Image (cartoon, rainbow, N blue to C red; front, side):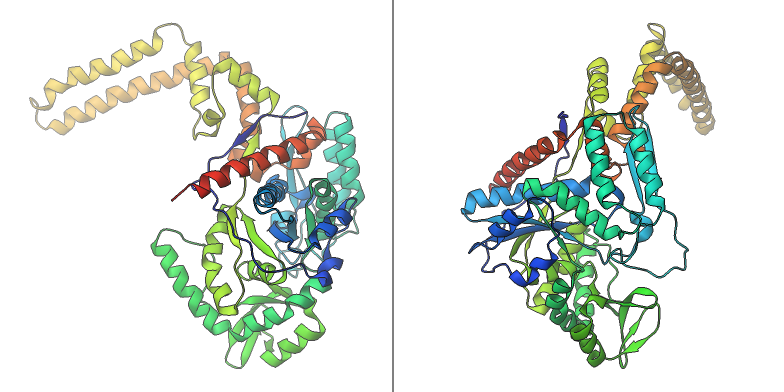
Amino acid sequence: MSLPIFDTPLAEPPSLPAPRAASWNPDLEPAIVRAPGTDPLLSRLRRPGALVVTTGQQPGLFTGPSYSVTKALSARGLACALERRWGRPVVPIFWVPGDDHDFEEVASVSWLDGEGSLLTASLAPHPSDAPLTPMSRLPLGGSVAAALDAFERSLPASYGRDEVVALLRRHYTPGATIAASYANTLAELLAPFGVLCLDSTHQAVKAAAAPLFVRALAEAPALDQLLAARSAVLVAEGKDPRVPVGDGATLVFLDGPLGRDRLMSAEQGFVTRRGRSPLTLAELERIAAAEPTRLSANVLLRPVVESALLPTVAYVAGPAELKYLALAGVVYEKLGVSRQQPVPRWSGLLVEPRVTRLFAKFGVSVGDFLAEGNALETAIARRALPPGVMERLTALREAIDRGFAPLVNAVEPAQSVDTARARALFAVERLEKKLLQHARKREATELAQVARARTSVRPAGKPQERVLSMLGFLGRYGPDLLPAVAGHIEVWFGHALEAGSATP
């Protein structure tokens, strides 16, 4: 089934990217993650004049928060809009950043069970002193089986649940790496929508990117200065990119005994930040030639690598990415790489039936739930008070203000009058709170409904797309949900680009 979809308004509409003179490199094809339906997509990519829209997100358990999937569908929506405008193939590619090493950030997944309660499953924790192993080399381990069992038990029996669980069990196995399970699941899920997934840790990608890594290392001191200067400008404009620069760190990591280790500029060349292993540029050039999979890019270099390797015209980015992409501009310029257009992704949420029923019952909207505070709960409690109570409390406050006003100029010191007035108003406020507490107890059923609705719309007080897995929704509402989301995002991008192109 489909669900109502709510769009989060953008601060600015996306601007229209421009075509570029570039073509697909067939040497990268081994890095495409294979799934049913990828061969016809590769055929489109090989056509003369074919271009690419990219996006990506770090690997996550059961595909992670739902914006991983909607980012991919955003790339599709933009690609469809550009293909209609330009009359040439534009293929969306999801860049799987398997070099990521932040285990704590990807080791958990959350979803709603059949009753609307928030559930979370996690992989077994790693020791704090464990090597920073890239997700492309880190196995899921046995704890993934318990997470899958918990996910399956929590959802009502249905065709949708069985399909999703079968998909996950195909790919999230104890011996599979976190990145491979993520990439294979997304590839199978997204291929029907025309989206390809690319394993950025594949030998073919790393070999193609190796010269750019070496160039970034050779230019490391100059890049560090340029980035520090650019960051200062952005901070002064109130656009802090929140990426540390100017500390001597290069844009390249080296995989070694302690895992993924940042290369730092040093007097004789470079040194790994954690391992303190010294290396010269010549040594790193030899590693790039013989073992390119050991090198990886940081967040500022990664989009530059994408643009250097792929005929990409746009990168679909989230809010935080847009901030640091503004900083990365100097990297493109220094390394002589054409820059793809950063485009904001679609952002929004799925509104479940229990939530829409509540909206109708209380005459509220999604915005009321997204607003800070508990205004709706307070309104329900106030409605349960005896008629006229709130009006009388308001009248009492006004009477206190009127009664104390003549005393302010007549009594010395006036501060004592203000203090007495504040105490009287505070007593009324305490009385109102007590009355509302009793009313909330009487309205416990309705308030529980509101709490469940709030958990759906803003789980744990955070945006839905940043907490709940898309596969949890598919398991509850069936496979027809994803085409509806893809279609909605495609229409949204068409309208958003029209608005952006009309902006002066």
